Image 1 (cartoon, each protein chain N blue to C red):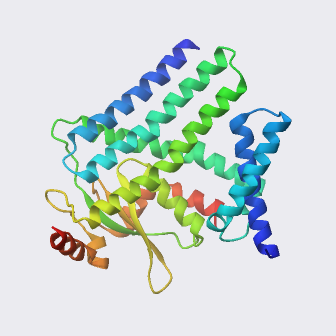
Image 2: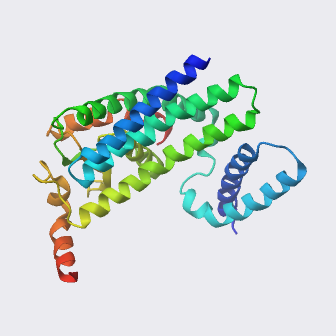
Length: 124
Length: 177
């Protein structure tokens, strides 16, 4: 059982590491948001599984296990909402990747990008 | 409070109370009493934000089992695939394959409810490499997702939709309308 706990911890730590490295290495806001999703998904899930296995093997009460599962569930449920809001806010602020978006259907259909840029310039 | 509002409140109240019981995980009378009071207040405040259609839609056991199956089997596989792809981009020396783009993909025709669209959008956002920026409806009543994609492999919208959504949308279509 200890070996299983260690394996899940190592996998979780690996994906958390990948996410953190992605936040450091990615060139713009959007890439950083994408990479940080790794932390919230497979990083959290694996660490929660390791915690559940450890709690089950060391005679802790069932409440601990339920709380761990709820903790993982809440992280997973709330993460996409904040990610979506951050991404859209960055887009409307006029932030773009270095080479621009390759297809940019959002600007083509809504045309909000230019307005946002003008507003920011006026405020500055 | 008309009858319709009351069922909304009741369904939110049951969810809140179950959540409270799981969180405290004890059956002492004072915990249950406190949970009843708190859930009643929370449900009264939040039911109009949570319930838009029939109140007891998810209490159908078949749908609940389908939801669990989707979360554990279908979604987890997509998640692992996307995580490995993201790890490959991040760990490559020159960030190979990082080509950001915003692409419009069509939603399935059979998913019309806000819950279904929301769940597809959130599933897309949760897989690393794709973030849903907007859900929009055109004049014909078809829904589209605007997805910010970290590594654009396909610019054709239908095929891009198949790559991004994978098997997730079919299964969500079985849970929500």
